[in-house]
Image (cartoon, rainbow, N blue to C red):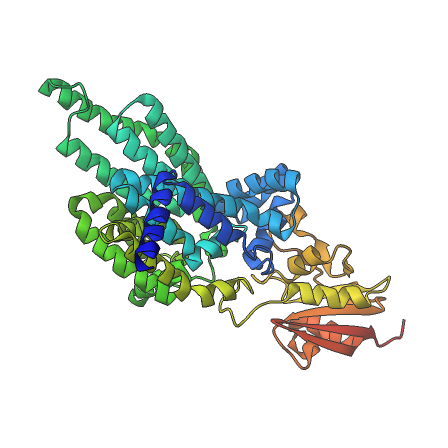
Length: 502
C-alpha cells in the first residue's frame, strides 16, 4: 500500500514535470486570484481609479496635471479597458488578475533560466499562494502590472545578456519603458540591472562563436552600450513624468511619514500581506541565496537595491509605502525556489502548502475588505443602500469631510446609480481636474430651500451633525434636524429634515 502511494506521488510529480514550467504557477495564481474577486468592496484607492478611468482622455490629462501624474498612464490604460469591459468591481480588477497570472508564469521561466526547472516551478508556486499576490492581484491599481513588467524586463535582460541582439535589447527597452510608465518607483529595479550588466561585462564570458580576444572585448563593450541605449526610452518617457510627479509629491503623499529603521523590519509582512508568511519567505529566500552563491546576484540585487534606495529616499522625502515595493516579491520567491529545489520535491511542496495554509487567515480577511487594518472596513455599499431605500425627489446629499482620502462622495456615487443632488458642489472633480469637488463657500445659502439632506459622515457618530466642522456644520445645524441615523462600518448616515418644514 505504501509503495503504491509512493508510486502514485512519483507519477504525479513526473506528470507535473512534463508540463511547461510556467503553466502550473500561472494556473494556480489565476485560480487563487479569481477566488472571491468581487467580495471586497472597492476601497479608496480603487475608487480613485474608477473616477479617473471613467473620464475622457482630455480630462485625464488635466487630472495628471494637478495631482496624479505618476498614475496617469495606468489611468489611461484603465480608461481603454473600462470602455470595453465596463466598470463593475470585477471588471476593474481583472487586469490585475491577468497581470499577476502572467507574472507567476514569467517568474517560473526566469527561475528555470537562473537556477533550474525545479527552482523556477517552486518559485512560481510559492508566489501564487502568497496573500500579497491575491491582495494586489485583486486590486484596481498598478502594482500587479508593475510586478509583471518587472519580471518580464528582468527575464528579457537575462536573455539579451546571454544571446545579445538588437531585437532582444529592443524588447527589453519596451518592457522597461512600460515599467516606468506604470510605476515610477519600480525603476529602482534598474539599479540591479545595471549591476548585473557591469558584472557580465567585466567577467565575460564570450558569446558563442567568438574566439578572438579582441572580438570578445568588442562584444563585451557592446553589451554595456546596448543596455545604455535600451534605457534611453524610459528616460525620455518617464523623465518628464517624474519631474511632474515630484511637484505633486507634497499633495499626493501628504499622509506618508519619513521612513524609520523599524519600517524595514515590517516590510516583509507588508508586501506579503502576512507577517508570518513574510518571515517564512525571507528565511527560505536567505537559504536560497546562500545556495546560489554568485548566481544570486541578480535576484538579491532585485530585492535589496530597490528596498534600500526607496528607504534612503524615504528618510529624506516622505516616500516609504510598502506596497510600492510589491514588485520585488517575485525575486524573493525566486531565491526561495532555489532553496526548495535543493530538497526532495515532496518536501518542497510541503513548504509551499505550509505557506498557503499560514496565509489563509489573511487571504480570508483581504476578501472582506482591502482597508487597513482589516478590522476597519468602510461600507460604501451599505451607505448607498440606505440612501437608495429612503431617497425621495428633491433630496440632497452632503459629505463630511469632503476633501479626504476616504472619497466618501466617490464611494456613494459608485454604488448609487442615481444619487441625490450634491447640493454644496460648485465644481465637480472632472471640471476641476482633481479627485475632489469644490464646495460652496457659503453653505447656508446653498442649502436654503432643500427639504431633506442625506448626511454621510466618516466614522461612527451618535450625533453626526455635531461631527461636521466649520461653516458647513453651522449651516446644517441651523437649518436641519436629525430624523434618523444609520451607523455602518466606517461611516454614519443621517437623514436631516428642514426646520422650516418645506
